[in-house]
Structures are given as C-alpha cells and as structure tokens.
Length: 312
Image 1 (cartoon, rainbow, N blue to C red):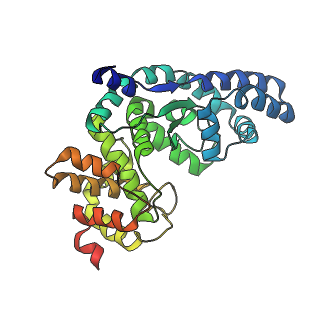
Image 2: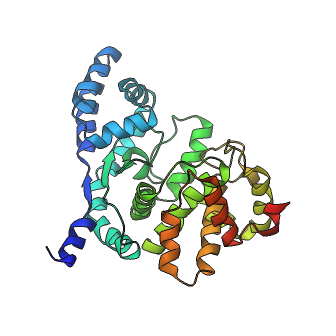
C-alpha cells in the first residue's frame, strides 16, 4: 500500500449512528406501554443490549443505566418529541467529518485512529471520550433553540438555553475534533491547571483544524477580561477541585461557565505564538503527559501566559 493510500485509510473516520435508530425504536415501544417496569425491560433489550461498543462506553463514562433512560423519558416527554428530528441528522454530520480528520492528520501526522459514535444519552453530556472512542450524545449535541426545555428545572433550562442558542449541530465538526484530540492526549490531569490545559489544548487544536471556536460565553468573555481572569485562576490553579472553572453551572467565576477552557486555550495560544516551529508546538501540546505535573508546569511556564501572576 502506498503512503498516500495508507493516509486515506487512517483519516477515514470509523463512525456510527445506529444507536440513535435503536433508541427511537425502543422509545416508541416504551411510550406505548406506559408501565415503568415494562419500559425498563424495553430500554434494556431494545436499546442497550443492541448497543454498539460506543453506546456501552458512553454509558460507562456517564453512569447511565436503563433506569436513567426511563426516568428521562418519563420526566421530559415534550423534550424528547422536540429533539427527535434533530438527532436524525447525525448521518449528515458523519458525512462531513472526513475532511476535518484529514486536516487533523496533516497537522499531526502521528494521529492515532479512533472510532466515533453518535448515540442517545440521558442528558448528561453532548460529547466525551473513552480511550479510542469519541462519544457524542445526540440528544444534546444536535439541538437548537426550537427544542422544548420547559419541563426542565430552572438551572437546567438556563444551561440548555445558552447551549442550544449556540446551535451545536452547526458546529458538530468542532465538537468531534475537540473530542478526537482528547483520544490522542496522554495521562490524567492532577489539578485545575492541568485539567484546564487538557481542555484548552483540545479547543486550540480543533480551532487550527476547523478554523473556528465554539460560540460559547467563555470564548467571547475571556479576551475582554483576560487580566482579571488570569489573577483569579492563579489563586485556584493548584487545587484538585476544579470548582466553577470547569463543567459546572454554579459557582462560576465572573458568572461565566467553563472559563477554565479559556485559560487553557490562552496558554496554548501564547505557547504557539512564541514557537518557531508551529507544527512541533502542536505535537508538543498533544503529546504532553498530564501524569507529570512538572512537565505540565514547564509547558505553562514556557508559554509565558501566566507570567508574574503565577509566581506570587
């Protein structure tokens, strides 16, 4: 096989959305019977037992069970009716992924293959990974402003309103590449600094591949408030608890969710700008060992982003 042919094989995504079809078959059967015990059996047999390795990895990563699905279906009937047609667009998203992964491979030739699965979760995550699997929760990642969130708690409504306003389906390639970068990263972050950099690297590399960042609050708020964010972050960066900086809608500094992503991205941006060899800089980001706190700190120090604030 020629090098070009080998590259084509590596870049072509192994992607599946069959779990979405299975979910709606199980959903239709479950809502007809009404009885919770029978619904539980239906979701187990018609959805989970027929699931791909991706669905099973997604369930393990997020702690989903058959009961999780039954509870979600029974609690938010209008939500599921309104999200259904959106989830059925997943195959068109898959079709658009190959050129993005080719760009990623051109940027990072050592890219390892990973499988991409679009499944239905129980409203905990639009996207995550497990080892060599990219896992997309289509019941969130395909939504927009038309989805009915009226049955949710006020806090969940506030989060979903912002998330759906960003029209995540329109930026699906960005989400998938972000998660794909995570399948290439090494080790487990030990503190807020490491975890923010872990996410920031994925955002930065995804931007290099796709040409844009997600239209979320941390992206728009961060640059205009960089100095105060930096000072606040430095005070918390050695803590194991990520607090409101990541993955939380409460206790967020400055009232903006996920500013840790912004800080991690800004560190990468500073590192990249001062690097003479841009491709090497990307490689160093992706191959940073998060098990090694000294290596993480050395990378951050080399960026110069935290500067004097980090030495106070």
